[in-house]
Image (cartoon, rainbow, N blue to C red; front, top):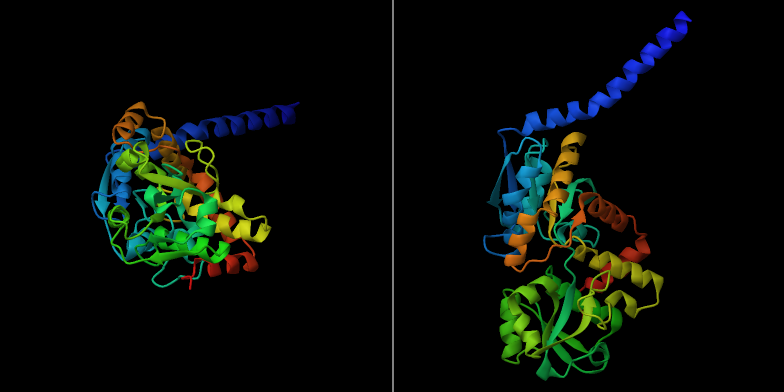
Length: 346
């Protein structure tokens, strides 16, 4: 009986310890963050889409982190956002006081054979989440006569690009290489705004890689006035806002080509990604991810995003982490198809 009593008492103590551990850990996280500043590093200059997303997130996320730290945005542009990605991974303190955002394609560049300047392993970032999955589209000036996917396959066309690592160039090259389309890429534009001006001047016919949210927030009048057409969606899942427009990964029945397209366009799922350094304490990782998820449901945050005409279609940190690991697990033959597809088309 005495042994039974001792065993029962020990079991009670162990159970109590397990129950008490959760609030103790929560208290530890709150104690750590109370009175602290969390830096939100932004790999772009002020005023662009990534910058606006990051600054808006920073205004609201702090109140959802235990201890309510102040979140301070800080721009760190350079090297196509490699500078901030390298900083977050290798230099920033690994204690939960720094998170940041960089170009959505950056995590996939190494997989596609572009490693110059990289000092990180994308699978080891502590992924906090993405504010939206932001699918992209091909958009053509209506006067070009390119209205459907069939038109893209049979009629000559020209699209504008802004550099070999930009979505505009990558997506145009993928379409031309994989589907043997009769299109040309005119690259060297400073950005999408200049490509649009060139479309209006009829120097190019369109662009492939226009984020749906940007098109809605800044240039919806082009659709309302039927000045542009949308023949193709670029992403992993069809956008319900544009029914009837075909999805790029549905345009091949080859399973390896489908996998390669999934690898290339997976960056659309993590359109506005936020990450922290690797090896964060697990309780702070959970606190940051929970705070991010809570912010995505915060009525004040959502109201401001609506006012800014910015989409919120959140992806959790765990989902982004799983996606990156999934893409890096693809077999070499699929990786080669993807690598060949993004090469500059002849």
